[in-house]
Length: 405
Image (cartoon, rainbow, N blue to C red):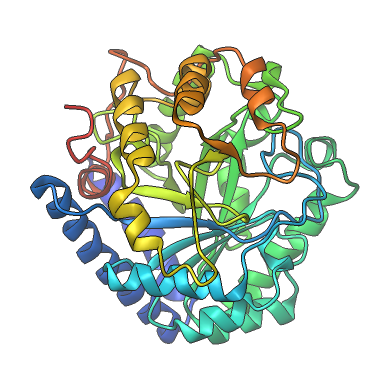
């Protein structure tokens, strides 16, 4: 890492300190930074000692309701299932008892979930990453999040104007999302922008100009995902090719050296080896039906929350289904079993007696129709992190916890 790289990293960090208030910075540094660091260390110790299992953090999908209808989304369009406020409160309470204070909040569109901000306010010692399409983010909501101080919106942009409208099946989505971005900047929030990269948006979003444009809009981090062909309308032809996956990885590593914001991924460790957060046990997912699932797109499960989620710790401690799922997935690949080996995945789910957790009720048939597509496991063709800063983060947060032997 050159002196230029150090300076670029410092500049990216300085934007967080200059564009937000001291109170928001304190919440971010303490609730997310310090508490999450301690939680990850505790999780690692539990895994090493074979103590009762509880993930380092939980992704929570609150509702199936959404104001858009995106191709490749696993959420049931028009679905009515959602967690109760009591279940959401119970999930957070149980997690805190196990040392976890950070949560990913998903939907559908989570801003359609009533009572969300009241629960966040009650748990002011936690930190929440709100995954939203941004079209409902007004100045009023952004100021409400600023008052809370413990939430970072992560706004999904799935392409520029033409691609956003086509992919999301609505008009003027890109413009409406940008209004949400600008409301977050006006409120001085710590916020990021995310994208699920596929063939149809690759040229729009995987380039330096897009990074600089998003940074100019006030985003402090950019999160790249890889498109997964799931849901009722999966469109597998839009998946990245093997060459594009490698090109995306190379682009991320190179841009991290001097980007004006932080670039995030959860696919590769510091050596460039593929990672699956669920296979390591670092993260699992809770669906709008109260199902405790392997990961968000994996919509079959055996374990369900009770009315106040007071059984969550017991589920994680004792679920043979999740334990065997982690073992099977880690043994199969370091990548994504949904993409690389859907046949083995479905065979396992059927053997275990897992059930569909969605409103649409067609997940098993969807998995049966899936074929293998390129995932993010590049085997021996690895691209290591070049930035010392990102190597440090990856070693602390994404080194596998012994899951892969």
